[in-house]
Amino acid sequence: MEKKPSQKVNVEIFGDTYPFKTDGDPEELRRLAAIVDDRMKTAAKMTRSLDTRKIAVLAALQMANEYAELKKDYDELVQLLEDK
Image 1 (cartoon, rainbow, N blue to C red):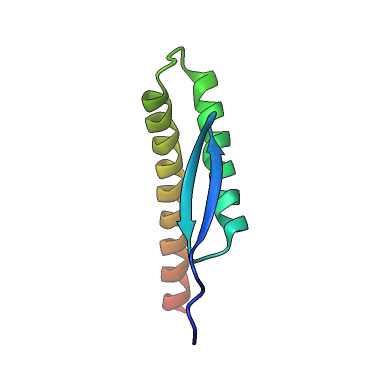
Image 2: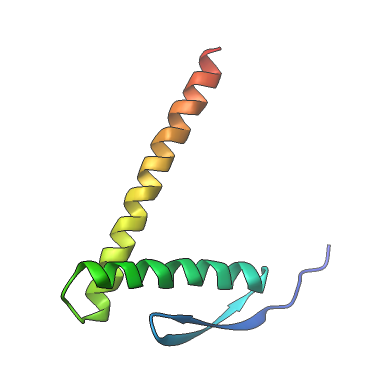
């Protein structure tokens, strides 16, 4: 199967534009960037800091927490299915 050529995609996150190359769906990359942008905007409202790095870390921690909760739920579901 022939590999798709990389495409350049510019996304905006928290007021900055980032150029990416992707072998995947550019719309998926834009969708993910929009999620990060939204999380950073939400994190910025929760803190008085204007430091973009601190806002990004807060957003990343919130996303990591959600991931950990989802992984725990997933692992519990898999265990339930294996026990049947």
